[in-house]
Image 1 (cartoon, rainbow, N blue to C red):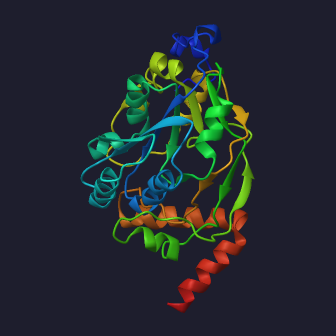
Image 2: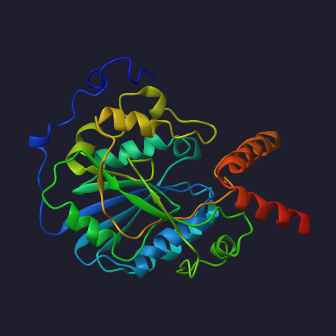
Length: 294
């Protein structure tokens, strides 16, 4: 992909100019687009955060892209389908696994089809806690930015696979919260894959990397989301930072979405452990103590 080697307008010429984007005010509509593959124990917290904190000043369409072959996720979606939440509409979009594994395909389809004023592209480990969506809606009044993002997120410690919080998410579906889990504030200088909030007119005009073939090609295994950086290049913005409370992310050691051989799984775990040595020495020590106790 020729990111940076040619002007972005050569790849995506239809980005609407700021003056052509509607400066919407009043009760805004926000669509949240989330992927889930083998992460039902995280998705249950994300959907539960909307049940516990229903928006008052905006309407939300919660779109989840999933595969029915992921039966645990399907069970979670069936449960939340039965819950009526003020100002929230559940919207599940099923894809074959090989389509779901290339995240840009589902994001592109959702972007082109969205009727919302703004679209928040996220991952299923992000929660929307008290004040998050209503504050976002207030901050978006009259804006024409192509892309905005939260200036900070509140993160859990890096949790091992058998952490009680994650184990609770694997039980029968119900509405869960993080309890007294300590959270660390992490500043965000620019938009990232799960923290990309795009103007609806931009979504409908250009989709999500629609003109880059590799990002619209199904894959037999889950792929790294390199398209997120390409997307920011195509919209000509790293995002405008906004003060948005209640953006919470569950950080987790195990990357269950990846498929492949046992060797590949072990290799990914080793790479993850190497990264932890540099960034998470305390979390790594806790994992080792846990393993030695088994």
